[in-house]
Length: 363
Image (cartoon, rainbow, N blue to C red; front, side, top):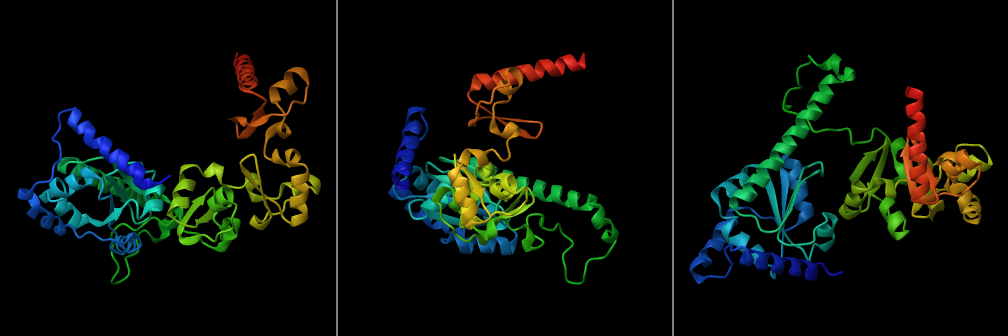
């Protein structure tokens, strides 16, 4: 899939929509050629990594504007939206702005889930995505979007400040004066930073690369997130964002412990990403190559390590005493356990029976 072709189609589509609903159609005009100089008042950067480092150093939001020379509404925003005094003032005072071509920075654009142009994205110094808007934005719409992103960040920082102030571990120092030369303003949340390497998952390898590409790629320190008490690192922004959207798809089963060791030797032993197995779309970590071969020989035996009733259908077991293997794709999470069913009808019957039993107990 070529992003340029997708973006090109989206840009043309947006232009056509404006024509249909009676909005002003864009056409280049020599009379307005001088307006392009005014946009220089927004100090556009051209390199994402450097712009992000600058935003982080200045504790400001990063405004990313994705564009393309084939996109008429991108040109329209250049001439009608960016020169607006309110937009320019807000950009100068509160943002680090970077303008990128979607076809050149394709992986970054796809990492934000973009499918059309123009596209406006706002990211915090801690990599929280605060706003994503695709399509043309007029001056008032863009200014409102930027203002809302600022408010979102302010609310997040305030929530983090309250959390820290209510933490008993910080009460003893609540009345201490700040050290000389240090700001008394709100500090950045630090709960995403690991205290030591003991929390590092997958030995620092990127879980998305391991599951999607079957490759061991070392994660970068700057792309990291703590999930369920474990620190995961990622190869790039794309894999970072994919994990944040659906972490369950990439985290190892059984807390990363070896299922073969647990079932065969009744011992809890951490698995290794070098001895990983992908089975039915799920990642299992074995502790050695021998355990990995054992898993591959009987995958169904070990795949249900974290599933109730060893992966058998609980409805068939309770109603008929039959051992019918469930399908991981037909799953139910209930009271901290995962149940598998051969099809949706068995799952619905199990839920109905459990609900009826619960109602009888309450009566």
